[in-house]
Amino acid sequence: GIGGGLKLATHLLHDLTQAETQAWLYWALLPPAGWNGRAGLLDRAGSTFQPSKRFWSFVQFSKFLPRNSVRVSAGGGSLPFAAFRNPQYNGITVIFLNPTEQPAQETLELRGWSLERQMAFRTSEKEDCATVPLPAESGPKMILTLEPRSITTLVAQIRRIR
View 1 (cartoon, one colour):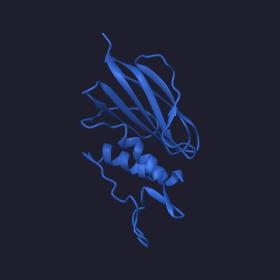
View 2 (tube, helix red, strand yellow; view 1 turned 135 degrees about the horizontal axis):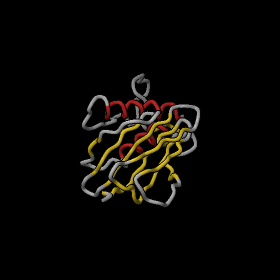
View 3 (cartoon, rainbow, N blue to C red; view 1 turned 60 degrees about the vertical axis):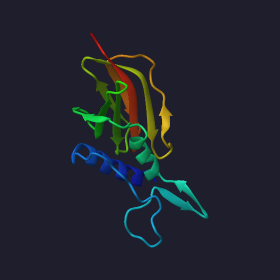
View 4 (tube, one colour; view 1 turned 90 degrees about the horizontal axis):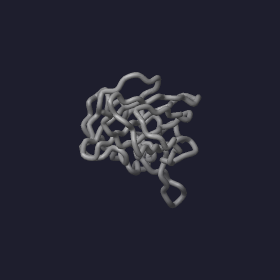
């Protein structure tokens, strides 16, 4: 369930923000039978395999953090998050975790920059990297509702405000 996905996401977020990790490789796609180490990214379903919530949590980081992204300093917020900038296409990616049982609102505000063409994706108990509807307007500030026990990734282009 989502508990394993949130555990992996918390570990990834910690490594990327506190441990100054430069890259992250999760190598256990399928754990060998009888292995009591890390769980794999895929779960057995009879004679087939299906993506686990760990897989979809990993996607929230790996799919939306392009090569050459740089973690940027960000403060505030009541829940764990990390922000990254990709100067190649003037983009920003912010990953939010809500491990609580209640929905939460987080405000993202960029001083001197406008958020444009924003998209958000969420993994929760019921969703697997699903698109989250967002307001169409651009601007330096956005309020995002985070579902309980979820990982939400916001991707946007940014433009300097003069």
